[in-house]
Image 1 (cartoon, helix red, strand yellow):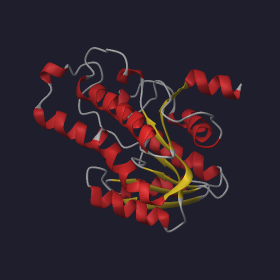
Image 2: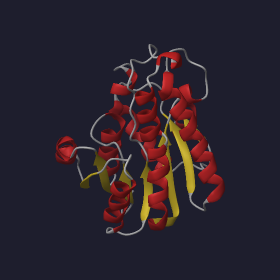
Image 3: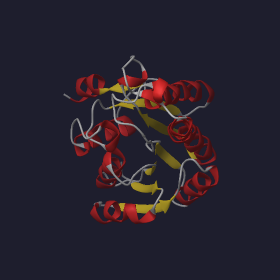
Image 4: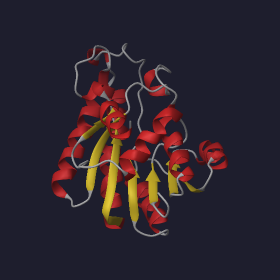
Amino acid sequence: MDGTNAVVTGASRGIGASVVQGFAAEDAHVTCCARTLDDLESVVESADGSVTAVRADVRDEFDVERLMETAAGEGAIDVVVANAAVNHGPPGKSPLGEESYSRFDDTMRTNLRGVFTTIREALPHLAPDARILVPSGSVARESTPGMGAYAVSKAGAEALVRGFAADIDQSVAVVDPGYVATDLSGGKGRDPADVAPMFVWAARDAEDVDGEVLDLRAWKSATR
């Protein structure tokens, strides 16, 4: 990824932090964001490469506009990972009928509108062959009890991927790394560091990604 100019949202922990570190280790320049700049200090300090931290909340389009303009200072943007997401209830214990309106609204504003905003604000700065990657999971496609607004938001995010894939020249894809141990999964799953190589593959090497779901099977088949 030498010379690649990448943007990663929701980068303070979990998958986002691992992707930042994985991209930087492959010699990409990474501009990353989180709602609180202090939360990014350890990510920047531990990255083996060039990383720029920006305070930005994906719920605010003006924050995201500034994020993309900062990244574009390094040149056209080659890769965007729209990773920022929230899950306000315990996984598997948040049935839709018990979701509060405030939790539902903030989940949609972050996980769905936030992806829309990230892609929309990146568009003026994208390289012609840029790739946009949106992390998701099987919960977006399979009925799972108790996943509440989170599952609905991820299904919506995957619909955004398909819509943008049809509307823009650059490639847009879902990356489904399976269960990863993050706050969103209740700490269950694989170490986030183990999925960073999958995102490097999706950003650099995967073929025919536009509008597709790149899952563990596709990654393992391509890299074994």
